[in-house]
Image: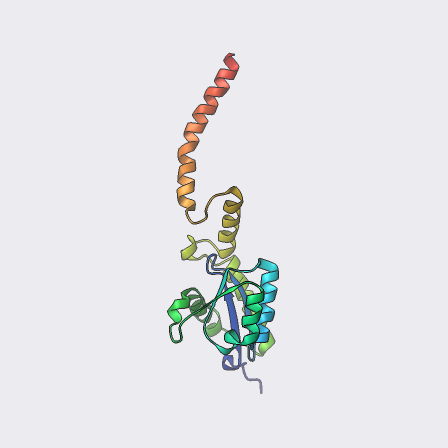
Length: 188
C-alpha cells in the first residue's frame, strides 16, 4: 500500500526578503538543525549578498552557538522575535499562510523528493507569476527588477510613484525647451 507523505514529518525552512517579498528558499527536510540553516543561508548569501539583519523566531536551530558564530562572521545582525509573538515576523507569517493555503493543503505528496519538487515549483510561481497586492500587483521579481533599475538611476524605490509624477511634470517643460532650442538652432 502507498500512503501519502505526511506533512507532519516534514520540516520547512522558509527564507523571505522582507522588502521585495521574494521567497529566496524553502528547504524541506525531516528536521532542520543549525548546520542545515547555515548551509542554506551561506548559499543565499553567495547568490544575493548578505542582508543587514536576519529576523527569526527563537527556535533551537536559530539560537545555536554555531549559527550565531556564523552570523557574526558574516556580519549579519540578528533580529529575534519575542517568544509567542509571531506578528513580529509578519512578512514570513503571511507568506507561510499563503504557502499553506495555496499549495500545501492542496497537494498530496508521495515522498520527500516529491514534496521538494512541488514546493520548488510553487516557490518559483510565487516569485515570478503570482502578483502581490503589497507590491502594487507586481510579482516579487518584477518589483526587484524595478528597484534595481531605480537604484542604478539614483532614484529611491520607496517613492517610485512620486518620482514618476515629477518626471511626468518635467517632460512637457523639457519638451518645450528642447523644441525652442531646436527652433533657435534652425534660425541661427
